[in-house]
Length: 138
Image 1 (cartoon, rainbow, N blue to C red):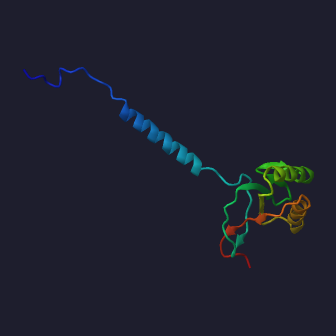
Image 2: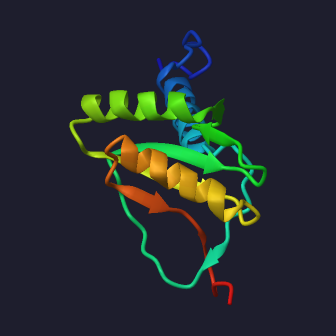
Image 3: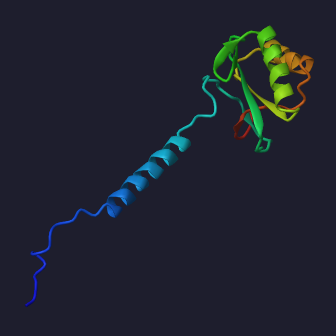
């Protein structure tokens, strides 16, 4: 006698459910990684006609706002504290530390120069001035 498929007890298969859960987890993680912003202080960067993209291992992001305020990784900081943090991070990063300076288009020349002077006094050699790719301002 032949048994029909209705006679067997119902089973809940977990493998397809696990596949869907892992797929959703992977999509969530990927979308979180792509939503990370590189800077948190709104700085209007000037356009640069020349320049090149770099991949850096240890990076500090320093922002100079239009009014001359300094921010390190989005947190306000003053000049003496900046120099102390630079010396500490350089010692920990074994001289492979790079500083990316995000200077606002409206920042005064004196404020940006002061930042570069503090970086040099702390012994920082790898300093990059960040700008938007474009035609450049003439």
